[in-house]
Image 1 (tube, helix red, strand yellow):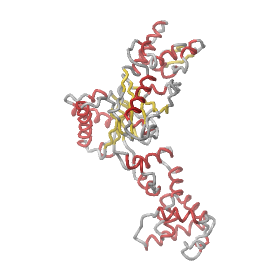
Image 2: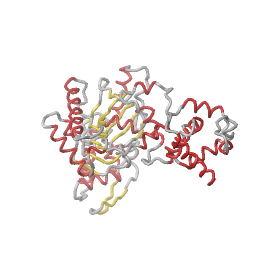
Image 3: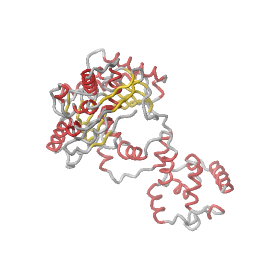
Image 4: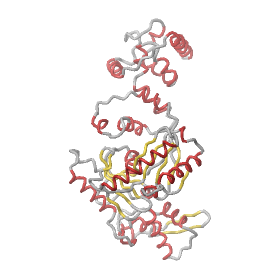
Length: 438
C-alpha cells in the first residue's frame, strides 16, 4: 500500500506539471458510471485505465486510496485524466470528506438542508419545487473549505448574544437589541455604536468576516406603517454595517432563523422572548403577516417574576433576580397534566453559587404553567396552546397554498423553550424544540 501511494503521488506530480487545464466534474456521467459498474472491477476492465500498473487497481481500492489521501490530494488527482476525474468527483467520496473532515463540526443533515434549500437565496420557491436538483458535493466541499466562518449576532429582546459560526455557543453578551427596532432617530448612530462595541469585544476587524444577524421580531402587523418601520430598520442595519466595511451581511428575523435551525422552511415558530411571546407563521421562509402573527403579552421575564413571587410567599431569601433565574433554568419544568402534578411530590433542590441551597416543590411547574394559564400570573391574555391553535386556524382558512400541511410543524425558540415538558404541548400539537445557538 505504501508503494502504491508513493506511485500515486509521483504520477500526480508529473501529470499536474504537464497539464495546466482543469475541467469541472460531470456529475450525471459519474452517477451513471457508478450505477452500471461493479466497484470490484479493475480500471482496465472498465475501460478507464491509463496503461501500466494503475489499470490493475480495483475501483473500490482506488476510492479507499482517495479517502486516505484526503480532499486536497484527491482534487489534484482529478486533473490527471478524464477517467480519474469521473471517479474523484463521485458524490459518495465527498460526502465522506464532509462527514469526517468537517472543521466546523456541522451536522450532516444541516449541511444537506442548507445546500438543498438555502443555496439559491431568498425567495425559496425555486429550490423547494425543483426536487430534481443535483448537488455536486465536490463543489460544495470546495466552497465550504474557503470559508473562514462568520460573526453571528442574535438580537434577543432581553440581551444580545454574539460569537462565531464555528462554535456551538455564544462567546459573549451585550445590551438589548430590541430598542433598535424603534425607528426614531438617532437610530444610525446608536446602531453603529452597538456593532462597534461587539466587534471590539470580539477583537476582530469588521472587514474580515461576514455577519449573520437575527433581527428581533417587531412591528408585527401587515399595515403600511409597520412595513415602513421594518424596511427602515433593515436598511439602516445594512447601511451601518457596510459603512463599517463588513464584506457581506445576512439579516433575518429570529423566527425564520429558528425555523431554518430546525431544518424546515415552512411552519409555525413560537418565539418566547424576554417580554412577549410571538406565534409566527412562515411559508417557504417568508413570514405570513397577512395570515396573522399572534403576540402574547408575557415572556421569560414574566416567568422569572412569577417564580420570585412564589418564593417570596414562602419567605425564601435570595439576593437578586439572578438567583431566581438560575433556579428557573435548573429546576422548573412544564407539567403535561397540571392537576395531576399537584398531587405529586415534586420537591427538588439546587445550589446557587454564592447564595446557597434552595428547595422548590410545586413552584417548579407552577412557574411554567402561566404560559397556558396566564391569569395565574395576573396577565389577561390567551394561553399559549390556544394562541397556537388560533394561528393554525388562520393558516388553514387563508388557503395561501395548495399544501394544507405547511403550518402543522411547530418550532419552539428562545431560552424559555428549553423548559422540560414544553414540547409535549396540549391539544395534540406536535412540536420540534429548537433553541437558537450561535
